[in-house]
Image (tube, rainbow over all chains, first blue to last red; front, side, top):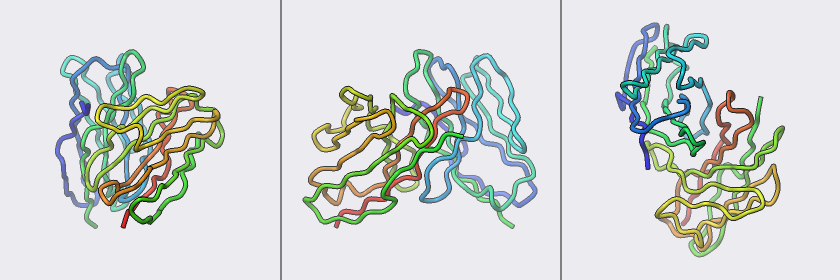
Length: 111
Length: 115
């Protein structure tokens, strides 16, 4: 069953602004990942954060993880029109279970 | 980095026919691959876990006789949609993992349209 829940479901911003997406989950996890999907395409892995990490950076991406609140956030700084896509969080269980995905956040970056 | 090749990218078939989708790990071996289905503007729904050399594990509600999975080698898993119907029209995606820190690598997906 789906346990990752992204928030908001849709986000529209101007180019140059920052975009923040949140993800909540229900069970204990080993790690959490964020993926990006362009319309009609496969998913691209963006970043993985382990359960013992609190923050991770990759280029313009910043991911935080709060295991006490069972939540994560993805921040995209200085957004570009090319960042327009759907973003999904996925959780991996502590026993190596399959990743389960939330419904995703559809980000639109307007030029 | 790890690459997963999925083929075909698009397929249109008539009701009642079967369609085979291939998922290959190009530069790594994958004992486990995953098959997902995605409805428009929705998230991915895990259908089954494909295990090399053994039977696939299907998620609840997924008909194993409808969606046949074969994982004959460490680099190839196939999903066959048997006796396809229009309601099977969807976007199907496979994934596999090389190393944990790389996350899961996804195929580019297959758009199936049953007419």
